[in-house]
Length: 63
Image (cartoon, rainbow, N blue to C red; front, side, top):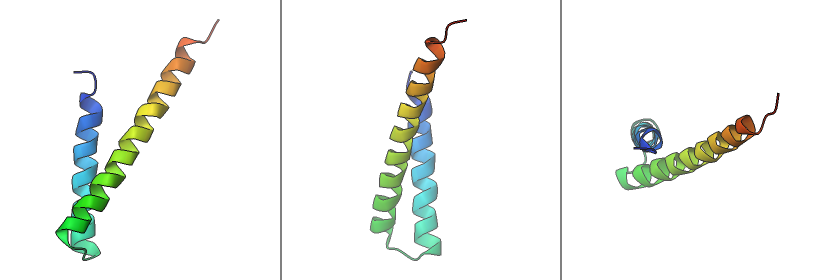
């Protein structure tokens, strides 16, 4: 699967952010899950576009 890495990263980052917000900042579990998943989604989207840009730049290099 092409996007397995990004899906796995989204799940891990969302889980860690949600648990951190819930336990250390004492948010409710709903708000912790919302903030954590939104942050993880933005992080993964940003990483996808940066990877795509780097790959395009790498493929366009001429010796």
